[in-house]
Image 1 (cartoon, rainbow, N blue to C red):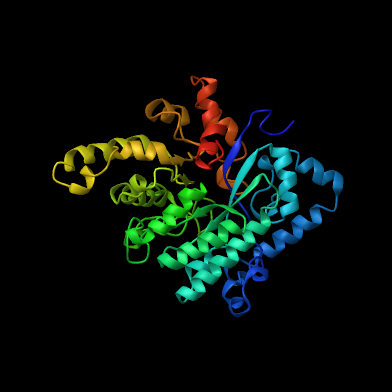
Image 2: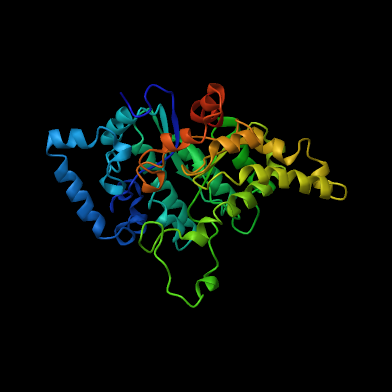
Length: 379
């Protein structure tokens, strides 16, 4: 029996754990050095990879240790973390019908690129690499396209989708010096809409965190979420949803959802407890400002109606999903495991189920299955 125990479950958030040379076979010659991950992945990862490889030589022990991968080792030591054939084995044991696959460190060269040419070259290498990892038909590669340049963004989007990517990740921030809702980007949004390819927002570059000056609070800086120094801390966590709210507000106000009614998207690993109030605040602002704002009067729907139609959200396993659904509706939220990242916990299904004792099976099925299918254009 698989982890999902017979239920149809689609996983809206998983990751590949890239090795230092992961991108290099997919880069054009003149940009090979630009996509080297060795300096961006700590030396300790090599030891983890070697230990994981050694553990797999003991067939019986390996089989026992991976009966339920989600409760087993995490990160680079997890089953299928960086090996695509192992990921198929992990899916067999987990039982997820489909799984979106995001990067862990693979976009670092994109974010530190010295110029636009290097940035789009690094994006192209990443898109090729993630598509090559997702050969199992249950895996959906999430490509990435920088929106710095509207024409190059459209071309790279076409390459990524034609190359096998099934969703496009964008940063939760400005598109260069413009809003993502600027008319220059209409060909980009229109292409996604026409091809039924969703856009994705995900925690990472562009996510708002506590301003650095607040770190100067007269105390030694505390360890992060996992006891180290590179991940989130308490004051960062409570800001995760600010950037998605800003971007989604822009897409509503700039008329993107009005012009492209078939456009779909997901807000992944940014929590979702904030969503019910965000929808209410958007509509309150709409009522308050539409009397004098001609752009608001051009909208045929309220802001919350656009988002209910177009966007899905993944709660964290420790959030009260049942309460969210009762408050905002069952059409908004998605299951996610974050596998093999430790933030997904060793039993996300149980944690979510614990909050949904009063929901009927139809509402649960939307959370686990059909909302994902709507977002991905499968329904």
